[in-house]
Amino acid sequence: MIKINLLPKKKIRKKVTFRGSYLFGFLLIVNFLALFLMYQRNAMDVANYEKMIEATKKEMVGMEKIRQEYQAMQKDKAEIERRLAAINALKEGRVLSARLLYDLASVVKENIWLKNFRKNENQFEIEGRSVESESISDFIETISQVPYIKDIELRRVEDVNEEGIIVKRFIIRGTTGL
Image (cartoon, rainbow, N blue to C red; front, top):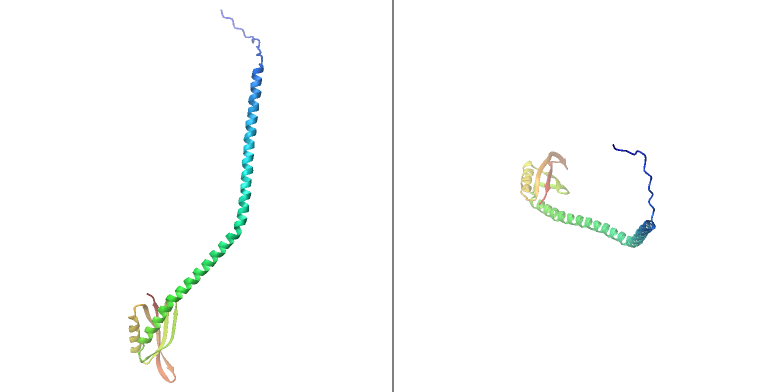
C-alpha cells in the first residue's frame, strides 16, 4: 500500500549568506553609478547643444544685415532686369516702326493722303483720304507685299466733305511682325 502524506512538510529556511547581499549591493551601486554617468553625459551633451544653438543664433543676428543687403540687391537686380527688358522691347519696336514709316512713305501715291497712323504693340491703324477707290485698293495691295506687314484689313471707306471737296475717307488695320 502507498502512503500519501497530505500534511505540508516543514519549511526549510535557507540562510541568507552575506556573500549574496554583498553581491546585490555591489551590483546596485554599479547600476546607480552607470545611470549617474549616463545622466551626466546626456546633461553635458544638452549643455553643449544649447551653447551651439546660442552661438548659431548670435551668428544669425550678425548675418541679418548681410541678408537684408542681399534681398535689397535681388530687388534692385529685378528692377534693372525689368528696365532692360523694356529698353530692349523699345529698341526692337523702334527699328520696326521706323522701317514701317519709311515703307509707307515710299508706297504712297499722288491720290492718297495719310492723315493718322497709330501703332500699339504689333498692331497698327492707318487713316487716310483718297480721291478714288482704285488708289485705295492699289495702296492696300502695295503694302500687303511688305514682308513684315500682315493681316491687312480695310475697315471702312466712306465719302466725306472736306473743304468743299468730296473725298473717300478710309481706315486700314494690320499687324507687324518679323
